[in-house]
Amino acid sequence: MWSFSFVVPTLLILLIILLFFFSLPRLSIKRNRYFVEMIIAETVTIISDISSSYADNHYELFSVKILYLLNLLYFVVFFTRSFIMYKFTVGILGVTMGASKAVRFIIRIPYYFCVMMSVLSFFDDLVFYVDATGYHGGKLYNILYYCAFFYVLLSFLAVSHFRKRLARRRERYSMLLYNAIIMAGIVIRLLLPRYLLMDTFVLMAVLVVYLAFENPEYYLELRSIVFNSRALREYLEEHTGREDCRCLGIVVRKYHEMRDIYGASRTDEALNMIGRYIVQLCSGKKVFYCRKGRFIVLGDGENNYGTICRDMMERFREAWKSRDMEIYLDVRFAIIELSDKVGSADVILNTMAKGLEEADRSDSEMPVMITEKDLVSTEREMSIKRCLENAIDEDGIELFLQPLVDAETGKVIGAEALSRLRDGNGELIAPGSFIGIAEKNGRINELGDQMFEKTCRFIKDNDIEKMGIKWLNVNLSPIQFMQKGLADRYAAVTKKYGIDPEMIHLEITEESLIDETFMNRQVKAFNDNGFKFVLDDYGTGYSNLARLKKCPFINVKLDISLVRDYCKQPDEILPMMIGAFKNMGFGITSEGVEDDEMAALMRKIGCDYLQGYYYSKPIPVDEFVERYSH
Ligand code: C2E
Ligand code: MG
Ligand code: MG
Image (cartoon, rainbow, N blue to C red; front, side):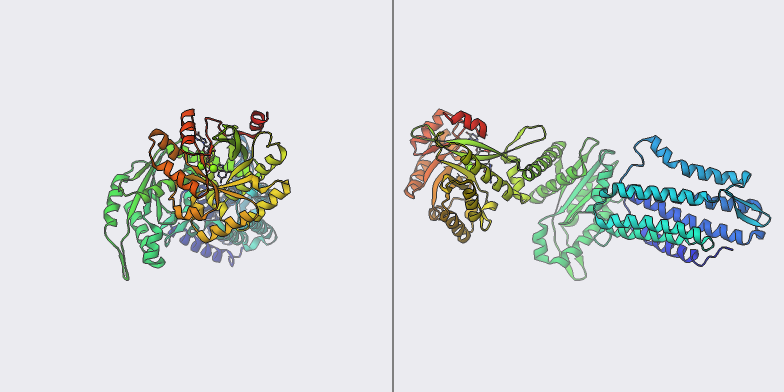
């Protein structure tokens, strides 16, 4: 006699999980589909287990055919469940079940074989048989266990081999636990077959998966009305390049300011209302909330984003009202056309983020249209980012030097150290493309340290006096300049290489001078160690002469734009400015000297040093040594 003490409560608990799972929005991604398959397989197996066991217990009430069919159904769903549970494991790991069709087929053979043997039992009684005394196991009954063991072992192998594909440790342990519980379930079934306990163990395994990965709440945001950015990423990772689709980005303008004005809870309440409104307005499309007031709507086939944007603009002219609040917000849009040519999910998400930032700043109510060109430029930016990370990790930032020429003698007297990066093809990337990225992702300090050290090494390793070089200029971006203890650190590096800090001039821009107290302290610390400062890019910032005067620069470098403007249309202002700087005791360098006319003009108005392509572009150190060591 089979006992139902465990299997019936198991079914009831499973029904509760089903109810919760299906009552929330779900995204059509592989993981979810496999999970749905699994819980359906589990439900059908339990129902079939209960009905066939009941029929077996009361065999006298049923015909042999019915008994046979009910038991056959149970065997088939049992094998199917074992296979689906394995499929779920490989699905979660992101492994396509065997690279080729052949491997996929081989993996399925035990499943097909067991199903076939169960069907054939009608003729050969090998797996089970039914006679006048009811249901009985046959000689090959144990294939039930072999099949289940086979798939659970395969799952263990997959987990141990591909575990790194699961980002979090919690996920890895959950997958192990999931398979361990299934294994325990099979053993228990072997030991206590009458108690129908395996279904309970499978339910436990389902619960582990539900809590670790498949709780739909993990993918939802704003009171579970819309999907979150994690869901968006997973969805795009699975779907991009496969189907054409248009993507609408919606941004609540000046989100942070609005949060400051209205307070966090009221803004959140308004966002919930906006989320609900967007879901209604864009019915049939997938709506995601990506923090900071940004929504993404994905839709395929026919799209009417123009009308949606207009309706939304109208709606935002009115307040978002609830019982105790009334908020006025503004909205902007960006639209991106996704074709099968576009790159990865990351490229799309980053380009969309940029598009929404632009839309946020824009006064125009027209959506920002994101083109394929924008996607390509984001892709390039991301690849530069990767090159930069690698180069910084491997000390691979290259040192280039551009000579500084004495305006009087026309001879090289110094050089500016400029960084260069190489992409995967060995092509040079100019700092304009990566210094900003390094400043944003916080690696500018490491980059600067490497450049400083390489400059010191260059001075130590070469007879720079022979080249006529008296000093080298090294750039310090404002973020680097803000580091406490930098002066001592740099002094230690010069000491390590046995060079005089006076040989290094640090170029800073006016941005570094904003915090006057800190600036004074920092400049003093550097000066005490023997370093000197040069003001870079003069003419691009908000030049406050009073402040510049307080700073003991030895030199001011006129920015290329200022030099170009003056050379195009000379006036009185620049010479007067140079006169003023000279009165303050600053030397003057002209950047961007590209021909002899410019050189003559800049010399005439009082520049002491000249730098530009006319003399030389920045070149690798070896080339520099070769060119100037004579
Ligand atoms: P910068 O410090 O003002 O450097 C001068 C820039 O002008 C260099 O660009 C140089 O190649 C360019 N240049 C020089 N002469 C001419 C000319 O005659 N015509 C034209 N069109 N350009 C000329 P580069 O090397 O691309 O560097 C750009 C900026 O990147 C630098 O401007 C500097 O602010 C920053 N940078 C470069 N290396 C580093 C570094 O190691 N650390 C930091 N923090 N910033 C760096
Ligand atoms: Mg510079
Ligand atoms: Mg400059």
